[in-house]
Length: 59
Image (tube, rainbow, N blue to C red; front, side):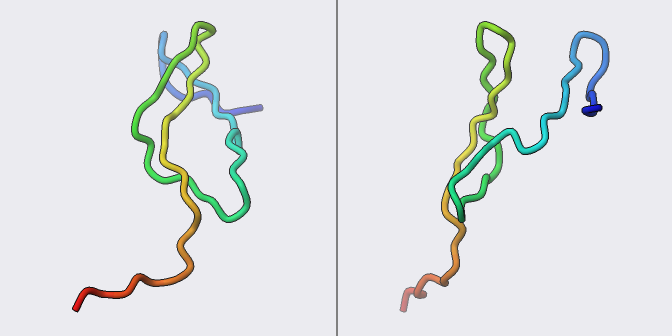
């Protein structure tokens, strides 16, 4: 059974792994949240490839 968070009118069901990202990508912080006409919640976040190399430093 999925976890329910919140109280009163503001209760939310946790949906694990609802985002499917391309291999090697990861989510960063959530920037905002949108709600559609069916009250479905969509977090807006930046998704970017995981960094595997370091950047050169300025001299």
